[in-house]
Length: 288
Image 1 (cartoon, helix red, strand yellow):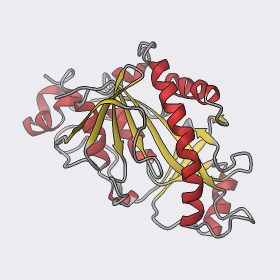
Image 2: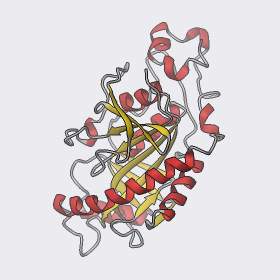
Image 3: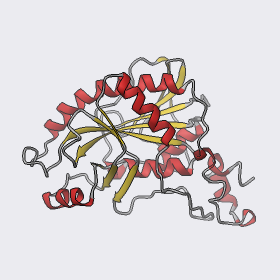
Image 4: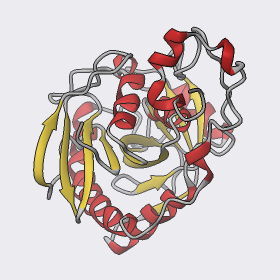
């Protein structure tokens, strides 16, 4: 199977990656079903990258319908070591204005019943998730954003809600009181699964609106979001391209490459054959 070093997951408004050369489309089969779409593999700034439209081309999948496990497992099969994830978010704080980008370093889960782990059914693991993103990758994204002339905010908490409806006014006000910074519907599950797959992960949270708490944004509409999405897309394209160039010269030295080393609790001899087969791309170096 063709390999890539960096995975790029494009959310609402970022459905393709400009500037790719030597492009091929790859359909990846996983033990967790089909990913959101075919992967577009190409060369960007001399680096092989794999791009995935999170909601599928044509934006066909709701946040709660996304095949998170298939998406991340497929990136692991493609050899990806770092994931740059871009997604549209609402701002819960005045200082994060539409068209600006937040690089959060924390997540808060308000989803219901989504599967957020590869484990279970014959093998148990508990990964460390106190710091859910790769600080090294976030640092590169921040520098690339500044170089691209984008207003960047480093740090903050991404509240992941269920959707697909936007927040009620009561919810939006409460999230602000809790100290949440931005709100979206997708990235928490990706971050958890990427950690289990020992892939570095970081989010580019593209601010589209102030959510309904703001007196001038009390009725968030799809039209409003699409307008800001179009403006954000150009910024994200420039930022990602510069980040890929910088990452090509940086060796991966963070601890996330061995996140499972002390996380698997099931004795090796007790791991079921089916679990070994199902998770071979992830646990193969620990469970032979």
